[in-house]
Every structure is written in structure tokens, then in C-alpha cells.
Image (cartoon, rainbow, N blue to C red; front, side, top):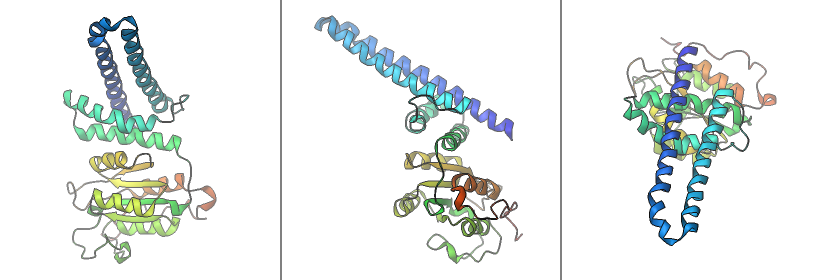
Length: 272
């Protein structure tokens, strides 16, 4: 598992390094092309334009170094608290384009982005009251044979144990956080707007997690990848222990239940 995580981190570092180099080269080209034309307005014009482009290159380089320092050393680089924002808004789209050029799948790129995003969230984000934390999951986590409609009221669940919803409800009850099932990105965004959480623990595939992290920034989102033994969007599962560990990390220590060290469940499909 640790080898896979290291590979994701190395992939992210490689892509973000290539993206930064290309971006700086592009900015340098922006400086060079008008250089000759601006010369006709006087030396001040070319120097002013050159200084402007240089400032942009320094800004990109600062963001890159700050992000790399945070990812590799897990330390905050001075004045780089916006590193997660740069990763979410600037580097991920460019990394995706660069990765496609080198034949890397979007799934791999998004997986590395989610891994690094989680590390940034862990290093930057503090602890919250349970009522300010939301667990958000896709509806494919519900057993496809189940007749209960959970998207409007999660309490309709009969807790039969045929899917991970039972375990997530137990986590909700134990820690006092909010828990919702969304059928799509629009409903997920509506739930976030309505409940105004300070922290989201989201369970989904690489694509939905990456887009959700981008859509909700600067709201911190800790992503937990679902497991897909039956293929995408059908009877997916989640490792409850990963969700519970995230809850323990982000809930204020004095608000944790006395039995927080006792895991709710290590095997979600207890009803099978």
C-alpha cells in the first residue's frame, strides 16, 4: 500500500514539475515575442513588460516551491498557505493536459492529485465541532437490490448490512457528524450550500472526487476512494476504517466520544 502511495506522490511531483517548467517557458515566450515590437515605444516599455513577466514567473515558481515543500517535507513554506489553491485551480488542469501528452490516464493523474490534496488538507486544516463536518457519498454505495430511497432521507435505511451505508450511519451516530447520499454533482453542491459544513469527508471515484475538490475550494475536502469490485457506479464499497480515521483526525479532541478508539466496523458488508 505504501509503495502505491509513494508512486502516486512521485507521479504528482513529476507532473507538477513538468507543468511548472512549461508554464514558465510559456511566460518567457510571452515576454520575448512582444519584446522587439515594444522596442519602438522606448526602452521603458520593453523593460516594464519584461519585469511584469518576470514577476509572473517568480509567482509561479514560488507556488511550485511552496507546494513541493509541503508535499515532500510536509512543512509549510513561508507565505505559501495558498499552495492547495494553486494545486486545485492551476496545476491540476495543466497536469491533466501534460499527462495526456505522455499517455497517462486521467484516473492515475486524478488519483495522485487526491493523494496530495489529502496530505495538504491534513497539514493545513485544524479540528472542528462534529456538527461542522459532513460525510458525503455517491448513491452507488447503496446496494442495487435495495428498494429504500436514501437520497432524500438517509434514515430510510433499514441497516440490513448489505452495503456500506449501515456502517456509515453508525459512524454518523457515534461521532455526531452529518451524512448525506448524493445522486450527482448538482445535488452534492446543493447539500454543501444548504448545510454549510467547515469540512467534508467525501467518498467517491477519482473523477468525482477530483471535480468535487475543485468545485468546493477553498472548503477543505478529504477524499476517500471507493472500491469498485462490480465495476463503476454499481454496488461500490468503502473501507470504513479510513472514514473513521479521518473523523478522529478532524473532530476536536474534546468532542470525540469516549469509545472513539473502538472501531465501528472493519468489514462493511456484515450482512452478506
